[in-house]
Length: 214
Image (cartoon, rainbow, N blue to C red; front, side, top):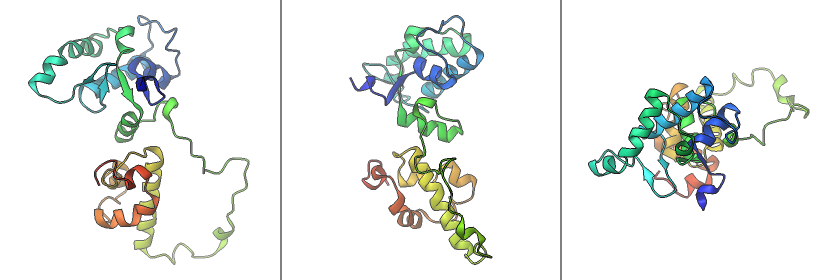
């Protein structure tokens, strides 16, 4: 089943991976404070619709409709017990699944380092034992000769490239309005249409194919 692939982890598995603990031998009654916090974060994000979650049979917390509330009532109670009373049920936590792309997107929005199992390796980054070509760095005033507009454009595109490396499922719209863009002022420096035109050569294939709108 696709839930058994590397693109999915249960809350129990992922929380343990996040803190470097062994989910197979961990005792639900003797969890560290760090591990409890990881479980709480994932469950809180799930019940508040920040991370989509599911069992092996169906999705949870799809919306706030009365019908969904009835279907999710049992899960709401069990998650609330964990969040409010620190009642950790290993078998239950090991039955709630989270998807890789959803967790990575949530980590970006919350400025959290992703769990090691899903951290991206930057294969094109220079290795410590490899020489770095800095021959152009000795040229005087090369940076000052670039217009402010071009400096902003280059910085904006570099941020976008890194965002798509970390999460290829981001749409153009999500990349343009990402907290990293807003934080450094580039989200408002260029219109969305301008950003989309410039970023097209560097966007992920999923973004280009329109896997998500825009």
